[in-house]
Length: 107
Image (cartoon, rainbow, N blue to C red; front, side, top):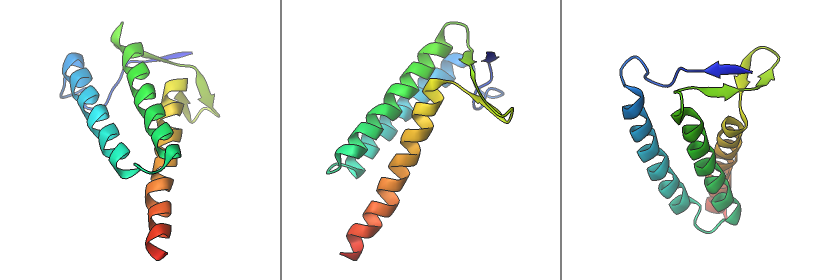
């Protein structure tokens, strides 16, 4: 298990600023995604998984400013379950928005 104490823009933002900004962005992004996938139940579930993963990752970081990464992928990068929730739901949403929307336009 590795403690990951770095975060996006940690050179420019204090942790509290980062937490507030990332929370606002996650909520706005989730609302936007729900608008894009309004007719697709799979998209709604993926958006919920994205939002829950974001919130749980933030809560994990809230205590000491670090997250515990315990999934190691061949030494290339380390993840935790919440990161996987965010990444897999993002990939699923990308597929739904780009390819399903493209398929609907052809019909």
